[in-house]
Length: 178
Image 1 (cartoon, rainbow, N blue to C red):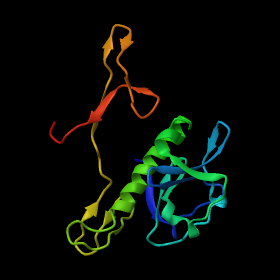
Image 2 (cartoon, rainbow, N blue to C red):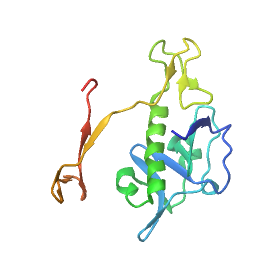
Image 3 (cartoon, rainbow, N blue to C red):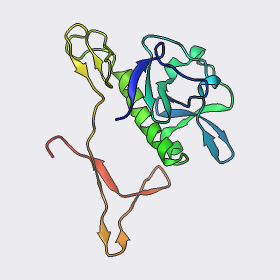
Image 4 (spheres, helix red, strand yellow):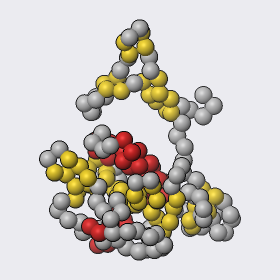
């Protein structure tokens, strides 16, 4: 993983840095006709809170919408479902968006130590949080999955989603020890 975690207060964002801002299952984007773009730092007012975490990705910074100052954003920018939006990005941007969403979701949900209940702090030099009271480290959760391509000669088996209009190979989560 080529990212690092920082607080908004310590992160050195440039005005032209790309921001991946997430809320629930959505990402903040600007849409014009068929084109989608991500906001840049100069378009967004951010809180410089010690509690707000940002992740440095290859193509920009990932952060939670809770980092937005007074929750006001321009009319051009709107939250769109991440899953629907990913297919409209170039592969490197889609990769950063998917990774950023996972890291931000983990950071928002990992606020307190599961052992002693103390508030977690950001670890230095790694994507992790630690408990200053009991020294427990908390890392982003891994969810093992399996993806299978079933072939018969030159044909492949694809599955169509009920909710979305795309096809995919067979995939699913793997249980521990499976």
